[in-house]
Length: 96
Image (cartoon, helix red, strand yellow):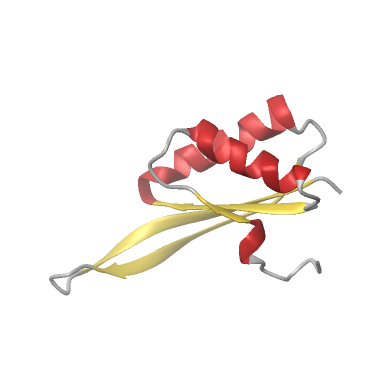
Protein backbone atom coordinates (compact mmCIF):
# COMPACT_ATOMS: atom_id res chain seq x y z
CA UNK A 1 0.00 0.00 0.00
CA UNK A 2 1.43 3.37 -0.95
CA UNK A 3 1.57 6.25 1.51
CA UNK A 4 -1.16 8.31 -0.11
CA UNK A 5 -3.48 5.44 -0.94
CA UNK A 6 -6.73 5.54 1.02
CA UNK A 7 -7.97 1.99 1.55
CA UNK A 8 -11.42 1.50 3.11
CA UNK A 9 -10.38 -1.92 4.42
CA UNK A 10 -7.86 -0.23 6.70
CA UNK A 11 -10.25 2.52 7.86
CA UNK A 12 -12.14 2.34 11.14
CA UNK A 13 -15.11 4.70 11.40
CA UNK A 14 -15.75 5.67 15.03
CA UNK A 15 -19.34 6.19 16.16
CA UNK A 16 -21.28 5.70 19.40
CA UNK A 17 -19.94 2.32 20.58
CA UNK A 18 -17.53 2.10 23.53
CA UNK A 19 -13.86 2.77 22.61
CA UNK A 20 -12.83 -0.85 23.20
CA UNK A 21 -15.01 -1.95 20.26
CA UNK A 22 -12.92 0.22 17.95
CA UNK A 23 -9.66 -0.80 19.68
CA UNK A 24 -10.51 -4.42 18.84
CA UNK A 25 -11.12 -3.47 15.20
CA UNK A 26 -7.79 -1.60 14.96
CA UNK A 27 -5.81 -4.40 16.62
CA UNK A 28 -7.50 -6.91 14.29
CA UNK A 29 -6.36 -4.86 11.29
CA UNK A 30 -2.76 -4.78 12.53
CA UNK A 31 -2.80 -8.52 13.33
CA UNK A 32 -4.18 -9.17 9.85
CA UNK A 33 -1.03 -7.79 8.29
CA UNK A 34 -1.88 -4.12 7.79
CA UNK A 35 0.98 -1.66 8.31
CA UNK A 36 -1.31 1.37 8.35
CA UNK A 37 -4.74 1.81 9.96
CA UNK A 38 -6.78 5.00 9.71
CA UNK A 39 -9.26 5.97 12.44
CA UNK A 40 -11.93 8.43 11.30
CA UNK A 41 -14.55 10.27 13.34
CA UNK A 42 -16.61 13.42 13.35
CA UNK A 43 -18.50 15.49 15.86
CA UNK A 44 -18.80 14.11 19.37
CA UNK A 45 -17.07 10.86 18.37
CA UNK A 46 -13.72 12.66 17.95
CA UNK A 47 -12.76 12.16 21.60
CA UNK A 48 -13.63 8.45 21.26
CA UNK A 49 -11.34 8.21 18.22
CA UNK A 50 -8.47 9.80 20.16
CA UNK A 51 -9.11 7.43 23.07
CA UNK A 52 -9.07 4.49 20.65
CA UNK A 53 -5.73 5.53 19.14
CA UNK A 54 -4.15 6.04 22.57
CA UNK A 55 -5.41 2.74 23.98
CA UNK A 56 -4.06 0.89 20.91
CA UNK A 57 -0.66 2.61 21.18
CA UNK A 58 -0.23 2.27 24.94
CA UNK A 59 -1.73 -1.16 25.67
CA UNK A 60 -2.00 -3.39 22.61
CA UNK A 61 0.34 -2.45 19.74
CA UNK A 62 3.32 -0.89 21.50
CA UNK A 63 5.25 -0.24 18.26
CA UNK A 64 2.35 1.66 16.64
CA UNK A 65 3.13 5.31 15.97
CA UNK A 66 0.86 8.20 15.04
CA UNK A 67 1.86 8.77 11.43
CA UNK A 68 -0.55 11.59 10.63
CA UNK A 69 -3.50 13.53 12.06
CA UNK A 70 -5.80 15.45 9.74
CA UNK A 71 -8.52 17.70 11.14
CA UNK A 72 -11.21 19.44 9.17
CA UNK A 73 -14.80 20.58 8.90
CA UNK A 74 -17.53 18.85 6.92
CA UNK A 75 -20.82 20.46 5.93
CA UNK A 76 -23.77 18.19 6.53
CA UNK A 77 -27.33 18.82 5.30
CA UNK A 78 -30.14 17.37 7.42
CA UNK A 79 -33.62 16.23 6.34
CA UNK A 80 -35.08 19.74 6.64
CA UNK A 81 -32.47 21.09 4.23
CA UNK A 82 -30.49 23.02 6.82
CA UNK A 83 -26.74 22.65 6.67
CA UNK A 84 -24.41 22.57 9.64
CA UNK A 85 -20.66 22.29 10.06
CA UNK A 86 -19.26 19.24 11.83
CA UNK A 87 -15.63 18.82 12.86
CA UNK A 88 -13.81 15.72 11.64
CA UNK A 89 -10.54 13.95 12.40
CA UNK A 90 -8.46 11.24 10.72
CA UNK A 91 -5.76 9.59 12.82
CA UNK A 92 -3.34 7.38 10.89
CA UNK A 93 -1.48 4.74 12.91
CA UNK A 94 1.51 2.93 11.46
CA UNK A 95 3.69 0.04 12.64
CA UNK A 96 6.50 0.72 10.16
